[in-house]
Length: 327
Image 1: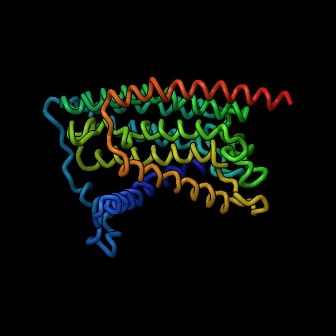
Image 2: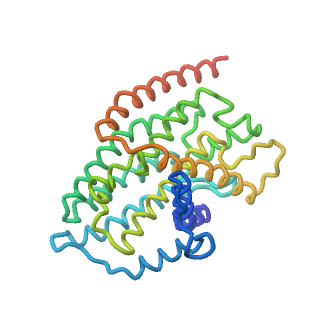
């Protein structure tokens, strides 16, 4: 149980290290630039150079900042991410820490992210940071509803709250037993989950909490050095968590696409992270392909389109589940 949590906690900084390099390379490709290319061969040492630079920076704060809250907020956000990460089961023998409580545990822990975000913006003593935190608060509250409804739709169809049981329900027939292939009606639910997860992780086009073209860097404008690195680490950790959660709900988790494939811990980790990598790369590409939207456009999209669609598909899945059990 704890082995799975420790393994995933180790994966968070590794994801931030590799993901920052990959994201800059993808951004360069999309924008017809080179990206990192001087520090090491093909710029492979750029992420390590950034770490050394961040560790050497001075930890400063404004004179009117709330010292204790300002320095605690990045740690709280990171703890929130790591706590939610411990929910994910890696294999049939690598259980998640909160697997008995299921998705309720993950949602409860993840909801504390709002507290850390608002704490960081308010305690910075900077109006731009406070505006960014308030934007992030409104965005997270608005997209939390379709996010939860998409999870509820998956739980309703599988009949389990335990994430491990949901994966096991998709691992008995290869590719065609995965959620999206076994029940195509889950495809819109998966789409709603993916869009809402971008908002949860503050990724473009939902990154108004840190819109550098308007409010400098939003809620983490005043953070430098190691504490800024903790905020970025949390963002990549959230991307990894939502990717793992989406894979477990809709793409069969650790199960292989080939029914007769050997079921060992090595292959479970391989298939789980291969699928997660595809989901993760899609999140990165979305940032550099779609423009950032205005706050009113994002709110309208959530309340008038995404939320009603999630409610309708929840009713559709309830009907299909009843029909499936009845016949």
